[in-house]
Image 1 (cartoon, one colour):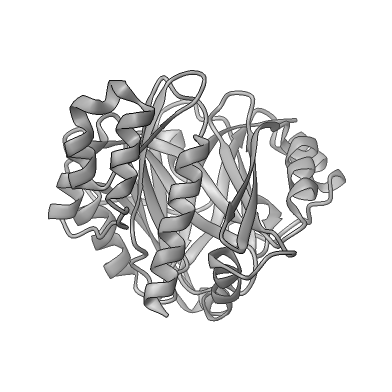
Image 2 (cartoon, rainbow, N blue to C red):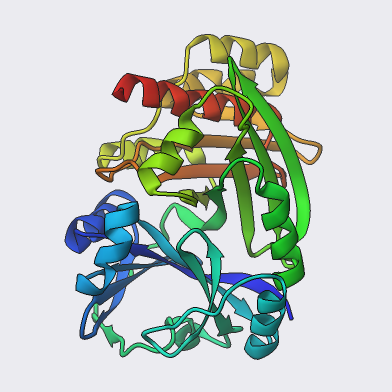
Length: 339
């Protein structure tokens, strides 16, 4: 009665071809298969262990009108689909009708979770319930992205504990980390929940309703409520990955130069690469296990409802208090600049 690993995430979009081009051309994903249904069509993309389904069509208009382009489904594998569904319903989730006949339960906002049997091999990784047509395209050489490290979920203020408890009771997740970040008159709470295998990690974030409105409040307004704020992709070497992705057209957020002056004072062992970090704008921090390096992209979507993160872990299993603050400040600067 537990969820184990990430099967795939599904992006609903008005412009499927542009969305697929971004993942293929800029991020190095490979188009694996296509599926055409009565009211929607989908393209399956894969890189490393990360799978993304990009879907568009008239059957999605209600979601797109309310939320804009964004993640609509986070599918998870489990040993016993029926038992996991029952546990989720007892924990407060709702059953959701699926156009594919799959077992689906509510998650947060209008984002759902499709529950699929644990994969037995490459063919079993295809999202179930659809007729997939392989595109016959040769897979790219090993790309920069290894897997989907974590998913950042933005929730209403004051709801983090309730959702963290639901994921524990429904899917066997445990609380891994919590942090409260205050920036000026704004503040956010965060709780990280993780499956026992470590294959699924959600960073649940919410604005402090007692503070001034900030970037999380703005996201909730743009998104029409709770939703996935960003996807974080794990890479082995973030500096060349950022350079490569920039050359392919990805726009990343910027970091004040003073950040890197302070970085050397905090982490002497990073002195040798601080110039490269400054050039690529990559952030660095450490936890009790090791270092982590991170950087956010700008959103490629009209309503700014979803963006992406690259993360490299050098032994680290956490998220780093200083990086959380710096990343929060970077997104807030972007919001203020955009007006």
